[in-house]
Image 1: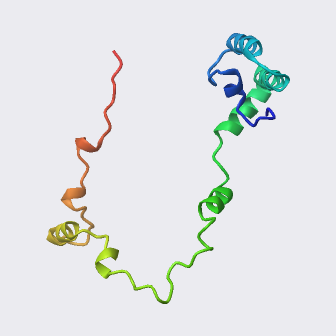
Image 2: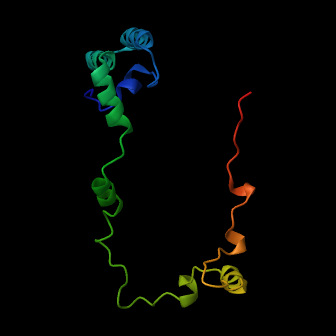
Image 3: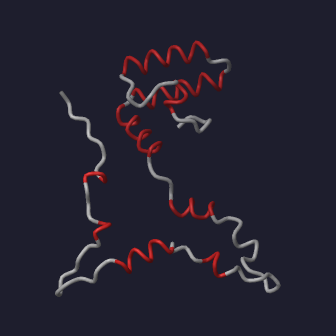
Length: 140
């Protein structure tokens, strides 16, 4: 990976779908536009990564891999432990603010007829219809 921690694709200004001739052309273009020694080294390192099939696959895996969940969670909750959630002198939130179930949904659940016999019946408002299917383009 280049010293600037940028993706080799970003350094050369190409997409992951670029062919080897496109990678070479992008490398030549990036070298011509590079201002300093560090930029030229970044271009060369990116080109060497993308020219080699194994290194290119490794760069693709590193770039598009999911982030580490432990690190992501640690960053997301970094300041949570610093401040207390509820202080003794803070008033409790109102109960109405804590209710998330809508009255209409609750009423609709109770208006459904109970299941008959010993089989489970799916409420009619949850039965699948054609409206839940995504649109599909049919090739001609």
